Length: 316
Image (tube, rainbow, N blue to C red; front, side, top):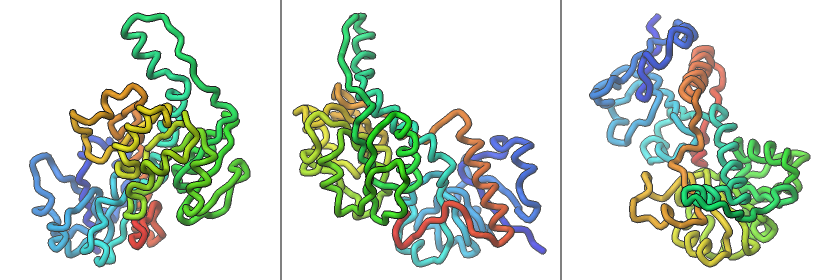
């Protein structure tokens, strides 16, 4: 019986190490795309792909049955030819959920306590207090209550925050969340929240979900954090809201254009804390991603449902 040809495009064999290699099911023929090699030249017979395949290369992948993404977002694969292909698509799902949730709350707490401004004063050698807000008792609105949104909420409850959330497909509400609404209640969430964290996937319906009108619905002096995708928040409207004081501080991990252009006002605005799409990174990230993939390989071989399966009709 022939083995399942599996091509990994984003890691090298040395990244796996002996322990991880030993976990790969014997039914898998594991190969790696080496530096300088072109994906389109190595798709013959590939049934499983770790990485992204461009629309121009898809016709060459006649044997492809499953694509494992290297991210939680699936927007890179939402082109018509792939959507019509019937190929299974999985994202990293829970592999980086906790890391992203912790990054989101870290940004919020840093902004609320004005640590970013204190850091600037440190560089100027100024011993000067910049008062921050008390986190306990804040109302935290979470936009998108999937894996990451729920992880944010479960961590925020330890800080005695009042938590509300909206989601396109609201499911069972945890006890520690006061309210879970559909997105039609977004205005209510914004009006009640001292802080908002965006954790929605990138879809046509979430583009510019937060623009000037939505920012102005929030209580003056509120905070907002985006660890979702660039484009969920209108960047020009955000900068204006921060400059006017409507928004006291914004944490941005994702931007419309990445890397963030050098002439973007996001870089220099004191009230904006900018990180380079790094929310999912941690010291053991590579091993966690590989371990997640190996777990899915075992399920694939056994004919079991894959973890992190993307509903391509919804885009997440």
